[in-house]
Image 1 (cartoon, rainbow, N blue to C red):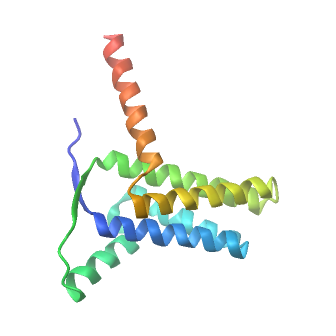
Image 2: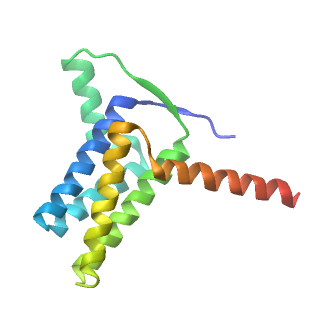
Image 3: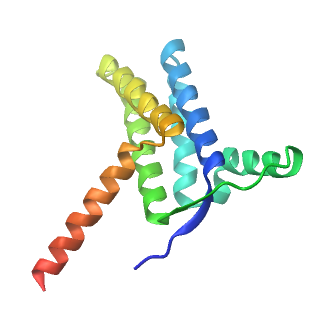
Length: 148
């Protein structure tokens, strides 16, 4: 079984809020390039939390300048990668639909939906993509146990 990693909960919520507001700004301004930037931010987090510069910057500022304590939260690294990957894919799909001029209303609806879900995760700590990860993980484990 994979071990849990320790993350700074405040930094995670800051990143989610910043990305959610960026996606919301993309919708309000009807700017597809902001959707692409949001997708890239989430994609960088898939590879490593060290590449998530908003997470790293908030952690550094809160620790060094504001002298705040680290707010630890244990999470499965696979969960973080799944959530960031799933969110990045949703934003990339939205961007590609907008870029090619196909189903623009659906693309903006997807952007708005994912931005609201990201803001929900930031402010209420309810992440639907994380729940999907847990559901898929449980289904796969049950299936593997049933096959044996």
